[in-house]
Structure formats: C-alpha cells, structure tokens
Image (cartoon, rainbow, N blue to C red; front, side, top):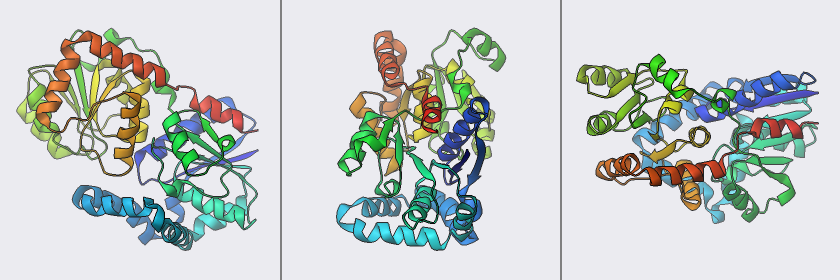
Length: 363
C-alpha cells in the first residue's frame, strides 16, 4: 500500500507533524510503502517565496494586514469568493505537485497542511486520482481553507476543533479526535536529575523555559532579565544570533542561553512552565510534557484561535504585558497547588497516541 505524507514548509509545525507520522509508520508498518514530501518543492519559485518569506514578513512587520487577510478569508459572506480563488491560485502554481499526484496516485494521502489537501481534493473531485485523503489539522482552531470537499477524514487535536468542523457542516463520521502527531522523543520518561547534570543546570530550582520559534522573536532579553533573580531561566534563541550574543554578554544569574537545539524535549522535561508562541505543534508538545504554557506575541489568526481553544479548556495564560507575565510566573512558582491544578488539566487533554491511531485508519 502506497502512502504519501505531505506538508508545506511554511511553518515548522506542519513538517514536525509529517515527520512524526512518517517515523511511526516506518517503525511499525512494514507493509506500507512510505514517501514524505514538501509540497512547496513542487511549486513555482514565486509561489514558494510568498508562502515562506511572505508569511514571515507579514507576521513580523505587517501584522495588521495579516489580521485583516485572515479575517477576510474566514468571513462567511466572503467565502464564496475567497475559497474558489485560493483553490485556483493553489493549482496554477502547483503543477509539479499535481503531475506528481496523478503519476503516483497513492492509496493514501496524509496532509498536514491545507495547501496539498486542497489540491488533492480537487483532483479527487475530477477523478484524476483515487487516493483516500486524510487531513490533519495542525491547529486547534479551523480556518475554512482546511475544509475541502473530497477529504475522507479529518484528524483533529481536540473536541473544540471537532465542534468547529461540525459547525462548518462536516459530518461527524469524517472527524476523529486523535490528538496531534508527536515525535516519539516527546513520549519518553525523563530522569530530571540526570538531565539537569547533562545540561548544566540545577534540578531543584523552579525553571522557566523561553522559546518563541525559529526566529527567537519577542522580548526574550527583557523577560530573561526580569526573571533572572526569580527563577532559573532556559532561553532558546534559535536563529537569533544577535539575541544569543547579547544574553551571553549580559551573563545574567540563573540564565542558561541556547542557540539552535535538537533536544527541545529535554529542556521541556527540566522546566515547570514555558513562555512561548501559540503554534499548534508547540502546544501539543507542551501539553504532553506537562508544561504549563504562558503565551506571548500571539499572532492574530491561527495562534489567537489556539489560545481561545485552550482558554475554553482552562489551560495556559496570556498576560497582557511584562508585569502580568512576571506575576503569572511567580504565582506558579510560589503556589504549588495552582501549578498542580494546571498540570492535572494538561493531563486530562493529553493525547499521546495520535500516530498509533492514525496508523489504525490506514487499511
């Protein structure tokens, strides 16, 4: 049986979900012929640039324009125009991917981004391919672009997401609440004492992790300075070399500085709470690691929808300013009951078996 797992590299979460599914199926389903691809590798250069650099530019420098575009394409009265236009633009710029799907015609297409799902669904409607299409929604909210006639199954992270789909007219039998596909390294048990020794930090101190994605965006330096005398702080600067150099020069007490890392799960296992962005994959990892999230620099649109979903569940904090952020951290540090109550809520919504359950539908 041929299975194509496809994502779009416009966000790390889509790729991480695809990789998690691929690794699980590779290890547990020898009966499957697996292939994973980035749809943007099979689109034209300008379209690929718009999807990657264009998105990053908007959310960093023109967030009001991004907010308006997200709202407009989500607005029901405008969908009769926005959805067909989006499908048309997707298809005329993705001829390489279209030819690939028609040529391979896999038994299953598992998509972790709405772009390849939209293209595959149109090919199904035109009877150009006969694949079963499984769409994994990598956010807790649901933008209309995720919903396409021709999708056989939607896999979602929460009951909140399922309810959103039901309100959009998707039939209940086409929705499965399996959770978010996680790499197996986020499913392990960790020895916190041994990890603390390995990383070079104290195991007995209340620990805050700062991580805001691959750009290291947001006021991380100010937050690190503010918390350095209140808690142990692990700052992940990622690609932000300027921030890393400044923090190293600051030499703040109780602050450990990292650049790009491949052991995120270990830092999470050492931490009590995390100050982070509200991306779907990050939230899923944080939940599974019993790590209380505090969200900063929330991007309007998918991230604000994610925050709304977690608020409904009673998980996470979204301080309005740095003073509120500091107060939130100190509450979690000084009130073990509040911290434990939040961890219990995380435990209730944790869904660590998503990859296993996704495997179960491929038959």
